[in-house]
Length: 76
Image 1 (cartoon, one colour):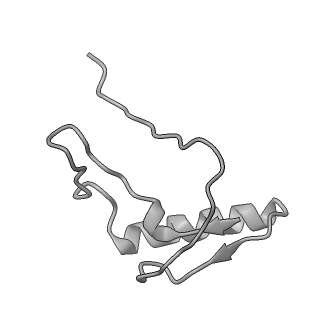
Image 2 (image 1 turned 180 degrees about the vertical axis):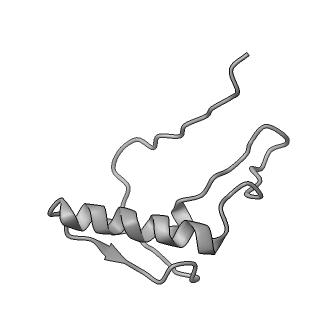
């Protein structure tokens, strides 16, 4: 499994055409969570590859399947 930190973003798409990332956790908060997810995957027996957290990386892939986006709004 390839785990890339830049793809784990929290985006607010309630206004305009582009999401804002201002509510995303800063690096000192999100990096330990990212590392814990990678370790949990390894502990489950999954081969995990990572890059450098927060670095600019070029990733090439062939995506053969659907993409799932979770859109959530407050209840009410």
